[in-house]
Amino acid sequence: MTPHSGYRWMARGSHFLLLVITMLMASMVLADTGKATLALAHFDFRDTSGEVDDQSAAHEARLSSLNETLHAGLAGNPEITLVDLTCEMERCTHRSPGLDALVGQAMASGAQYLLIGEVHKVSTLIGRANLAVLDLNDNNTLACEQRLSYRGDSDEAWQRMAQYALRDIEESCLPLLGASR
Image (cartoon, rainbow, N blue to C red; front, top):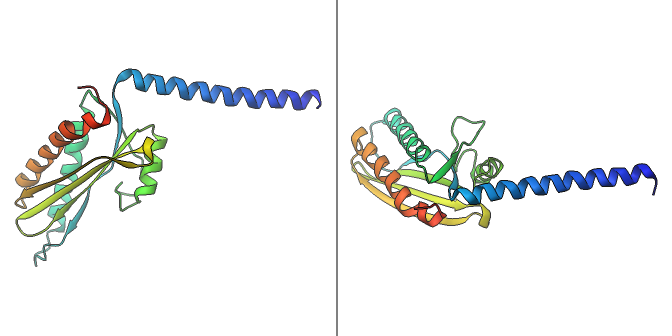
């Protein structure tokens, strides 16, 4: 072994050691805060109601409002740290760009959990909101799953559903994520 190769080995080893120390310190900081680190994907929308009238613009606006309500509510919650996803596409959902891409982005952002969801318009008066929180540190297993139903297809009905979904996430999912209560 030449002196130069010995120095290269030590330099590589010190870079690896620095990386390990940084990761340990980051995990200790997260552990000390008692907060869950959550990435929030946009919710998808599916309409199987069979209605004749095209309501796609109204549904798109309501879906956007739902996503904004969830983001604002969770970002303001002192029990979690919300991290942003940076999708290259218009929307970050489990369908587009896909779950694998979202998981990769969430992990790269330092998230422990990923919240995904979908609003399903079943009929003219009945809708469902399905949401799931994936534990990224446990092979993307379900940490929390909720199925909510709502009545009506109006701005008011969607806003009530958005507020209820936010409250349900905070009351039913956050304790399961280890967020301090």
